[in-house]
Amino acid sequence: MIIRRAFLGGSRLTSVSSSPAAAVRRHLSTHPESDLSQGHHLPEHPQEPPTNDHKKRPIDWEAPMSLKDDFDLLQRFRSTSGMLGSTISPHYKPHRMVTSPPRPKDITLELLLASGAHLGHSTSLWNPANQRYIFGIRQGIHIISLEQTAAHLRRAAKVVEGVARNGGLVLFVGNRQGQDRAVVEAARMTGGCHLFGKWVPGTITNGTRIVGHGALVEKDFADRASPDGPLTGQDPLRPDLVVCLNPLENYILLHECGLYGIPTIGVIDTDANPTWVTYPIPANDDSLRCIQLIAGVLGRAGENGKNQRIRKTQHDEAMESRMAENMDMEMDGS
Image 1 (cartoon, rainbow, N blue to C red):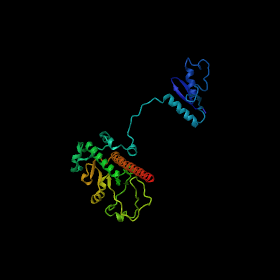
Image 2 (cartoon, rainbow, N blue to C red):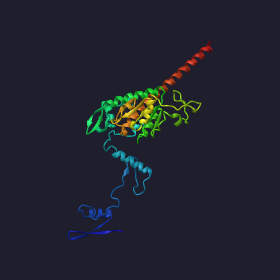
Image 3 (cartoon, rainbow, N blue to C red):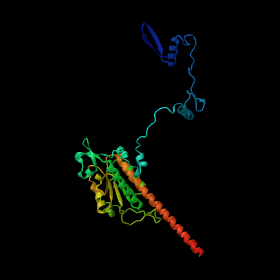
């Protein structure tokens, strides 16, 4: 059905159709040089349907697009205008800091600055024991020295690497929201344990009653489980190193580690006490990006130490088997 609308233009009444083709035909007919003004008729399809340059096959625009037509149209678009537009520069990808963290030797001040590790708390909340880690004050906020952060982070990475290389158990603890994924990934790379829930008081000092019902899995230096299966009736296993990403909420854990002489690594902000942990890392503990960076670097260091231990064990086993074969050959020859 054609809907006609009346428009008053000057002193004459002009009717306009709602059809686009009719509107174009009427506009061309008023032009003195158009074909319609000379008695010619406008064709039903003024333009030929575009053809696919990729496959040299015309596309039926009236019929529904098939999967092949969509692919041909995509290839045609790429060949004609694929090089247009701007190039996206490298940008921050949050998941890469967890799945592919940097190595300890790749730590730079620019990386720490981008993660917000230099931002401390208000000057009214600072702990005087952190004065050696503070670079200055800006707008009432303490600024942490990134040189101190980088140096302490490299030292903590060497500690984690050494413990993992000697077959020790590393425990990663992070209770704040959003820290669970970084804690789990760091523990997986190190081959240790993780805790992203609430710490149960007495797990270390009174572990026989709290976690004594669990079974222990014995592994060799190549991380191969013992064929005898889990061990029952054994004393609870204590960690050889604890990495705490939020010491303020885990003071009881740090106190229990101090009673049993377990070394600890902690992220110390300007409002925390650096004497709570053995190896402090001055940084912003409220920034999730900073926590992911620190946990990823420590996890990468632990992975390096674990791989060194496995390679050394495999090399020693190969040497022992070779020596045993040589001794058997000598005995057979004699």
